[in-house]
Length: 361
Image 1 (tube, rainbow, N blue to C red):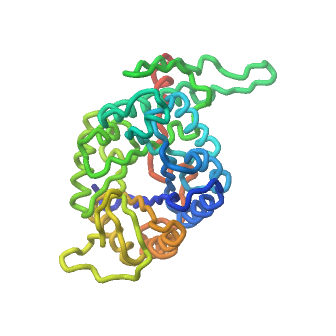
Image 2 (cartoon, rainbow, N blue to C red):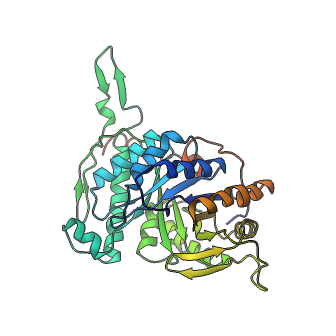
Image 3 (cartoon, rainbow, N blue to C red):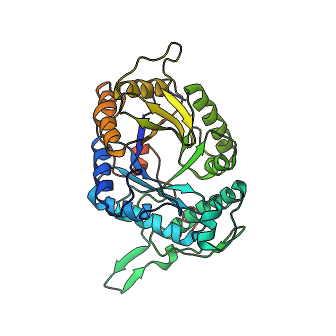
C-alpha cells in the first residue's frame, strides 16, 4: 500500500446515555464535520434500548452539510427490500452522504423478539448478509439515472424503459423489484463491514465481495497489514480492483488522560488493551496523532474509525487536538473536497449494471 494515499478518519457518535432526543447526535455529527472527518457511524441492534440508528441519522442529515452518515443496519430479521429503500432514502435526504454498516443479529434474544426462526451460525448469517447486499445493489440500479422525468406537458412521470425487474432468488428469500425509491445520488450508498481481526472468516468473505470499506481490529501496524492483505486477496478473487476495499483500523479511544511516553520498543504502537470491543487506546490527543501518522505512513491502513469512550469529551479532544495536529502537519485535509461520502473516500460512483447491459435485467 502506498504511504501517499489519503488518510481517512471516521468516528462513532453513539455510546451516550440512552434517550430519544436527537440533539446530542446532531451536536456530535456537527463536531465531526467541523474536523472534516469522512463520516460518523451510529451503532444499533435489536437488543439495545433507544431509537433506530438509521432514523436518527435521517434527522441528523438536514442539520449537517458534508459529513457522511453511516448507521448500523442489520440484515438478519429485516426485509431486504425495506433495507434497500431505507438506505436509499437516507442517501436522498443527506444529498449523497449515506452509507450502511452491515451487521447481523446473532443472539437467541434477538431471534425471540421476532419468533420467525432460531439464531443461526455466523456462516449462515453472513452468507445471507451478502445476499442482502447483492439485492440492495440491484434494487438501487433498478431505476436508471434519469428514469424520473416528470414531464407535465405529456403527463409522463417515469420513463418505463429505464425501470428494471430484479428477480433475485436468494437462499432464504426472493425479491422482484423494481425499487420504490429512485436510484440514490451516489448510485450505491457506501457499504461498510466490521471484520474484526480475522481476514478469512465469514465477515471477511462477505466484505471482500461487497464492502467499499471495512473496519479491522489490530494492535500493531504489521498485524493490520496482514489482515488487510488477506482481505484484499479474497477481494481480488472476486475480480475487484487492487486496493479494494478501503481498510480502517478501529479503536476505542479514551482521551481523558494526559500524554504518556511510548514504551521502549513500541514506537508507533498504541497504548492499548484488547477486550471484547477490540483495541482500546488510552492517552492524550498528541500521542494519538503520532499513532495515526505512524500507522498510515507505514502503509498499514487507509485510515481509522475511532469510538470515543466518553462521546462528547473524547470527540472534542479528537477534533480539536488530534485532527488539528494532523492538519497542521498536512497529514489530513482541512475541508471536505467533495459533496458525497464516495467523494470523501475517493470512491467512484458505480455504473448501473442494467444500463451497462443494454437495459435488460
